Length: 264
Ligand SMILES: [Zn+2]
View 1 (cartoon, rainbow, N blue to C red):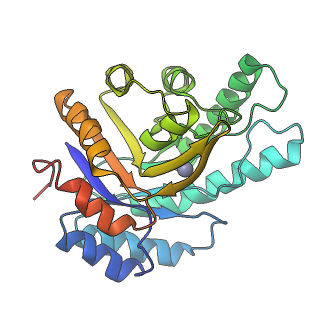
View 2: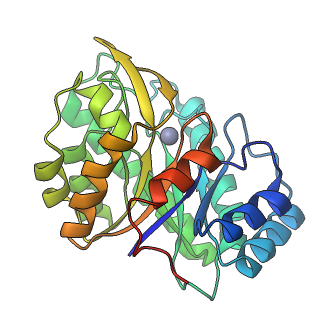
């Protein structure tokens, strides 16, 4: 099963954006807390209800300003708080219709000049701490650190696979970031073979250079089609968020290449 939907509402707002998804057979949407968690719990509850009415699975993108491996302790605590606030809202997005923990997407941090294995251990330990809070609060959410688009950022596919194994967290595989991270050289077939049966994912077109990701651009449908066929071939369960500059219309285009995916 592959769910496809937009990152954000493309400026429509949740009421209209979620209706658009329903009308165009898009069955997921990512709520983006890009610059901070400003949504009130009451609003989160109502967005959750609107999504359920429209049979749309919600996920959350935590704020960009997160670094779980900072040398300054206050920055780590502030980063963890941004993730916890995202989880608290995300819990309202849980839908009995899908019975699926709500993915909480975040970029875990930067390598800086720290040894990569120490960075890995810091991220893992901070995730374990966050999971304790999630368990205490009994929130229906799943931490899904993202495969990042720059070689200076923590989060390649092997680190994410190991984190999932050692902490039970999920993962967000950004098929555009991976291209940028490796400067255009990606074997999608072997990547997809390595991935778990179920995962959260992002896609868009992307500009990149030697330092990795520059910016997201519209989806190239021919490139997307190759990935879609691999996902189908390996029977993956994916919620796939389109992060192009025109996320709703590009998501519709992407969905047409996986015609069997629509839930209804
Ligand atoms: Zn992201």
